[in-house]
Image: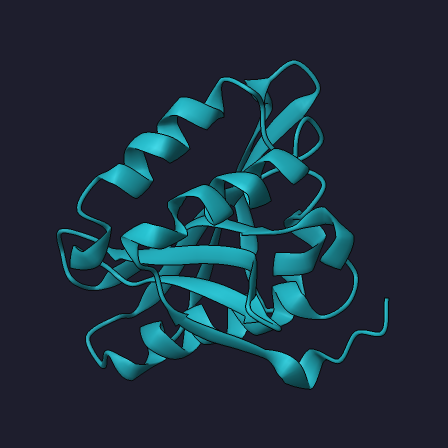
Length: 156
């Protein structure tokens, strides 16, 4: 594949992106998500996604990634949610584009002091490069062999 990261752009999620986002999810089974999480992701996409930022990444008209952010009730924290990149695009800088777009949204809100997320042992190192620090690690927290890492990044 002749791939150029410069041709990847983010835009807000639309309801017609549902199937494409679910297809991205499917490419990440079973290493990054469990099959049990599929229904939760579908419910999330069918829920009030438009009330919180949820982005899709496109490359040549194809959705190749998606991820969002929710604001905490205290309005001082943000939570990165349901971030994923289609497996054929892993290691090509697409996750960086997605993460930076979401962190830019958090930094643009002056009241946001910290960003939190939960991820697995497979991607915690990626987020550590952005300054996220592990607060708790729960072995098998998502399912057998898939540990849950709760991480935080202080912005201010």
